[in-house]
Amino acid sequence: MRASTRGLQALALLAVAGLLGVLVWRIAHRTHPAVPVVIDPHHPVTSPAFDLPRLTGSGKLTLESLRGKAVVLNFWASWCYPCKQELPALEAAWRQYRSRGLVVVGVDVMDAGGDARSLARRIGITYPLVRDDAGALLDQFSVLNLPETLFVNRHGKIVASRLEGGVELKRNQADFQRGIRLALEA
Image (cartoon, rainbow, N blue to C red; front, side):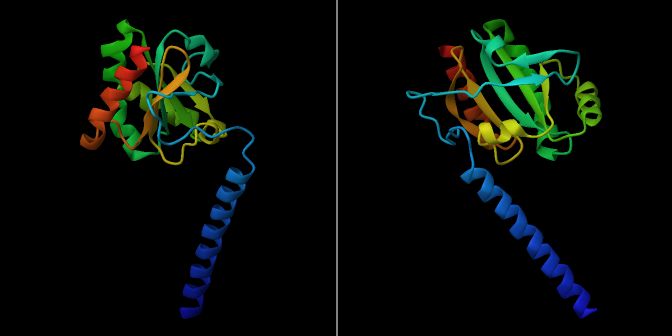
């Protein structure tokens, strides 16, 4: 019994070391500048572009097609519990601010498309959802955890520090509203 326990521990340690190695390799071999975690609203950074297939419906959505609108960019997955919890708050923000030019875009990453579509339908999500099967945008936007939310102004600049964790959490509500305000201002 002890030998099998040690074997499992060694296997787990190797798996963790392997994942750490992949993370270090991805950071070292990044081909584009990373989006900083902390953004100074007075010095926004240009958002990376994207061109992704829609999760519901057909066609693709590009960040360029949203120029002139403020964008709340939310990275999520159907298997992520905090992501599921925040979807109604994102839908409420979309409904409240879309007449002022705000678009909420949900980026479903490394997920089963059917599961994500089913969850979005069950909750009643009406804002645009796109799929990033390979998780390529995670690296471009320096996303390390799900959910994460970024705020892009009408000129394609990220204007507020990212929110890590659900937007409906008490600790994130004020920052979520601030990010929306900053995105809408420009």
